[in-house]
Image 1: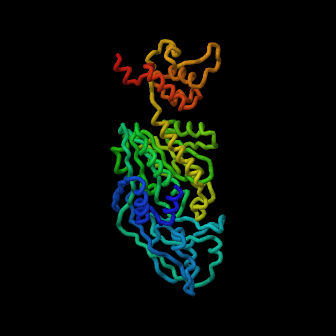
Image 2: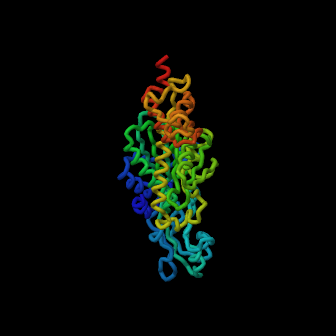
Image 3: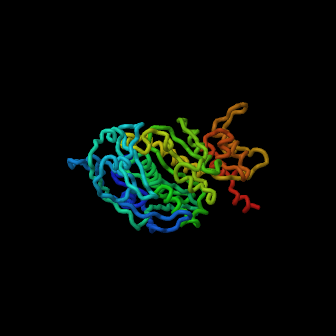
Length: 426
């Protein structure tokens, strides 16, 4: 994952343009992507697809001809979506198009101007203060013209047409945690799921520009939306902070309960946030007209670490062990959803005799039977056709895997069935 991020880091991405296309071509080495191109001007609900932006070079030269600001050194130096310019101007005029962060004087901030024509450069505050009263040559060799919004999609079919949506944004330039970490975890998550032999759900992975990308996808896929049962937005997954889960708008959807349960059981510090209409693309998937069960998995939330949207969000800021932990937790959440069945006790009149079936070895008078044997009794008692295994795990405070193993054992002995099995026996 870290090697993939290192390869993607130099590319200048935005909400449209060749940087996104180059990124998706690299991802296609890992998973097969269906790349979509949506033309400029396409109406998507209350929005329209913007013009495509591409940039070839940008610099600022002093009167001695020296490049004192150079896009080739960092693509963060140019305000995203800057219109082209090639002029000489005094510092007094140029200064109004310069952006810096006084609170972090050595870092270059990330700024954009997506939906209004403007141009600008970003520099460290120390460089901003050092600029002399001079005449500067300002050049941004960019284009902003009709083109396409590009995004990638990977559909992994399962036994059911019901889907799990995994979405991550690919519109940021050289920023590692936000959000090359989400891109890398998504790619490797998809690669792992390919190797699961008996997937219950189908999985749909989106690699989209933030906001306009999710709005565009939703506008063009209302038929697919009806099949989405669970969803995760993945972002900011490589920093050293603890894992954080932001609930969906529904708050207690199965994805919310599964994510919180996995974090609780991990034994590591974690944080759970209630839904708010701020943040990443979960706010589009959870908008009232869709109200999809889509939460957001991250480590330190956006805006809550100093390096956020600055040049300090670089390869040195990432922790490979944090990427791995994020991937493992995402896999655990999806595995829980895959295994969270609802069963019916086929022998509900008092406890069945488990000992003669070889399922129960407890010693008479033992007040705390082994965990597996306790799980057998909890599963039998909770399998009424309305409670899921996750419900039973939460009530019993037993590990979900132990509950699942108990359910499998009981089913193999004809003591548990699905609701379909129950109807067929009547």
